[in-house]
Picture 1 (cartoon, one colour):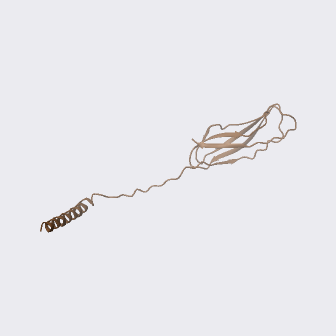
Picture 2 (cartoon, helix red, strand yellow):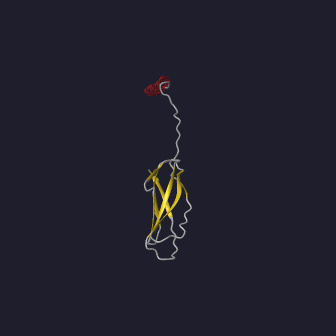
Amino acid sequence: MNEMKAKLLISMIVVALATMWTIIAIVIAPILVDRNIPTTGVTASANLEVQANIDWGIVDNNANIFRYGTIKNTGNIPLTLTMTTNIAESWLQCFWNNTNYRLEPSQTVGVQWILQVDNAPANTPFSFNITVNGAQA
């Protein structure tokens, strides 16, 4: 008989707990609400468009030669511009007027490159690459 009382007691406890959770769900459910928050975004991109066709031509010794172009930031983050070259000749140097220039997205800037020739051997061909770098500002 005690075993039947124990089973009955357990059944009553299970029913009571189920009833309690149902009541809690009915009472608390209206308090808990979900709200969707729409979000959008775009990943950062760094991209430069360089418009320049540089032919130094025949250069005079001990002279500065100027060439011009434009650089546009086609990415969506501000960039700080730097320039490097792979000049191998000790008598050549190349500079520009935009070192550490901050270029905003969609902004275009005019560029002036300056080739400095010092004590060059006569009739010596040369070539080099100019690399324009844009780092996130």
